[in-house]
Image 1 (cartoon, rainbow, N blue to C red):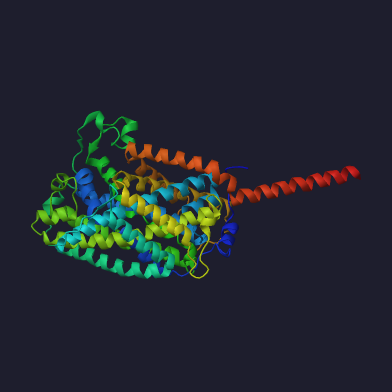
Image 2 (image 1 turned 45 degrees about the horizontal axis):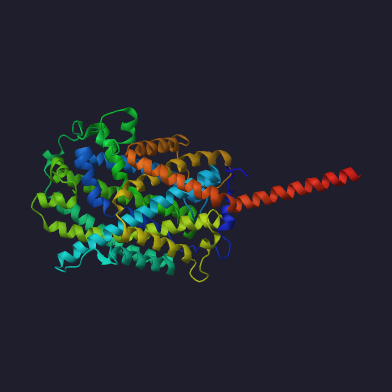
Length: 510
């Protein structure tokens, strides 16, 4: 059967009602807004902006954040239209299955697994590291790792993943309530940092706003670390200038990942046609304002050259440079609280994508069984939590960071295209929210997201290609043969053939 077969909207909606494989609708607008802020406002707000300012964009990092926010907003509009029309689990995977076919749906589902698995593992690892930093503030000597059978184990990562995996198994609504408390705390800390830092701003530090481009050093040794665009065009790797600003936007886009994760919870939302768009856009607006505030304070406090000298530059670097080292302690606590909710939402999103793919038979169907009492996919949630804990606790996750971005952006590209396709295929479908100026804005969204992908390193693209090859091997070895849509299509085809054969035989008898 064709690898381009699609799953109808009606079939997806019917699956969301299948007893034993369905989720409870318990989330409201506030829960979705908190979820978006919870997953986006993490360590990125304290560190990614400093790295982008020092190494790529200078003071224009504010524009980089704005460009990344606009790109995210365009893609999120496409997600909102889909989620309001097809309010079932799976996010970009489900949307692509309904429009572009099973193979591309599998690829995007595989990409989402990459995004959420690596993001959850990276952040869980850093959570353990920052927990030790907070212990140091209290003068407690608690190491970030312990040695077990010759292995250095990040115990903090195991603890935080275990806690949130348990909460998510117990119920999505309970997890959302816990996330609300942590999210309010971390937003308060971010606002405090912005206000405190504003007193140290020196307007002279904003000039030049876009520093002149300068070549990087290292020659051919940098081939794997330069952007794919630079590699393809033969341009020498450079910092600052216009291309530095665009590279900075690609980097800080990491701080906006997660809003697509909110869409994975569509099947658990009350009145999703209205609630989903409101919750997603409200969360994005809050996050954008916070990011712009932090980036303006950061580059106003110290010259960008100070940030460039520190390979581990963060918001704390700026406060220490102006003699306000006390703020570093507040920031450490803020990062720890910020990372906590990010882990929870990513674990939720990862399990929901796996749940949707297994319910469709592309992964073992047994993974999509839900608890009759709590309505949560306990099996797949525990498996996802175990995988994240093992990767975070036992490996060096630093090499995975850019893989998060490329997984997210590839999903954004396909969803942007899929919106246009669905408009053509199903103009009759009721949509509570529509992307304005379609198809122009969805096309712009796809182009911008692909451009940001091109600004990721060549090595990231190579790793991404390897991940896709593994995914294709899994699909053709298992998913294609066990696809519920494929099995049903084959059944209908065989029945049609038998009916035609009987009809032909009766005709010959007559």
